Figure 1 (cartoon, each protein chain N blue to C red):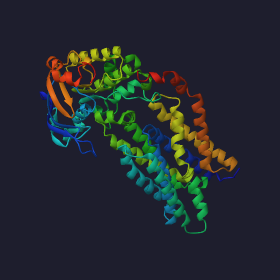
Figure 2: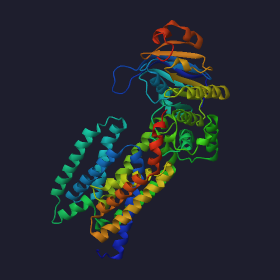
Figure 3: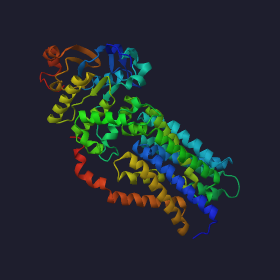
Figure 4: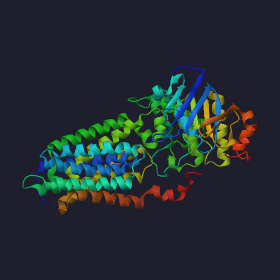
Amino acid sequence: MIKNSNVIELKGIETIYEGERLPVIYDVNLTVKNGDFISIIGPNGAGKTTLLETVNGLLSYNKGYGLVFGKEIKKHKSEIRKEIGYVIQNFEMDPLAPFLCKDIVMSGRTGKIGAFRFISKSDWDKVWYSMGLVGMIDFANRPIGKLSGGEFQKILLSRALAQQPELLLLDEPFSNLDYSSRRQIETLLNRIHERHNITIMLVSHDLSFVPSRCKRIIVLDRGRIIMDGSKEKILKSDIINSIFNGNGGKI
Amino acid sequence: MIDFPLALLITSILGALLAGFACSTMGVFVVRMNLASIGYLMSHAAFAGAAFGLMISIDPTIGAIIFSFGIALILGPLAEKARLQSNIVIGFLFSFMIALAFIFLNFIPGHAASAKALRILWGSILSVSYNDLLLLTLLSFILVIFIIVFYKELLATMFHRKLAESSGVNTKLYYFAVLFFTGIAVSLSLRIVGGLLVFALIINPTSTAYQFFYDFKKILIISPLIGIISCIIGFWLSLISDFPIGASIVIISAIFFSIAIIVSPKRKKSKVKTHQAIT
């Protein structure tokens, strides 16, 4: 992967879902530097997930241009995805699902290992390391459907880390979690950013859980970036208060 | 009990065994990917295709393959984008396929039309030809290689398609490979198990295996095993009782599934822990 000081560069991006007429996000201009830790906040329907999935190419933009690691997303999406860890928004898992945690974590490395190649011992070493990093090594042989929300979230995070990504995209990593699990995930994210210097882009609708190492906040509203600045500046802003209806909590 | 020449008996047993293997191997993916409705339609399309083949005097397997692929090509992309209004589209196409099949059967030339029709409707031990065996063996071999080589991609896709896609797996390729191989397995097993029941051989053994294991690898091994055992016992039941072979196989696999539901350790545990999945 070509090293570029800008991990993400989006210029005038507009993304419309297939079959829809109105864009979910539009006129999005965003530059993310290597090693940044960014939180994207906004109300439900603001286009936060769409923005993340435009970055990793799961959704195609129809206007503007987007570069990730200096490569155009549309042309190189398979290649860049191998370097992007994606933690999807917490979804309900069938309790009888036939998957063990270790296999799910390994599945994060599938694209990186590549087709026609078998899983090697070194791949397993990376899986054990990333499971250890999130404190889930003892859960390796547990069924994925039997985990609590917090444990499941940690396995998804571990899955993304096993990929050894340069960029980590996290979609609502604190949703559906109790306070203690939120704190654990927050601590983990801080630790991962500190130790591995991975660029992290986190989407949240909850201002009370902006990890301490996150220095920049982007506010998305109705598909458009309305604020982009330091955490301190954004949190004190009047606009935030009006969006949050003055309660300083969830949007 | 019917007396069979040994060669015919061996051919028939091998045919049942291979059909059991191929169908219940594909079942693992079909069940996990929620493609049951498409597979169900595919088996009836294969039935209509086989009837069409008989009507125009070509090998019914060729007709079955063409029709089941047609359904896969039409419904695969629709289901993939979650636009399939299952109740309406499947209800419509299911009845349409059965209606087509009966029309085609009505026009089968020759005197033995009704016997041929019955064979593809509920299967026949006598229908297994050397070519069927050869094709089923080839399909089984290809399936084993496909699963071994692409195991990690298949597992990632089965767990969560979007996540697999996001880590660089071309999930569309594996999705359509599953539809493609299911269409072939259904078409090649049609003459043995019968058009009305072949889909049960895809669903029942896999659903049985799902009741016992949390490890995808184990399900991939046990499901075909249950499929094979269902076919062998069903074959024996058919011999001693003169039941149609397809019905015998499906009854045995349904009994296995019913027992599995009752004794499943997963269900006993899940009663306590299901609510803990998301806290």
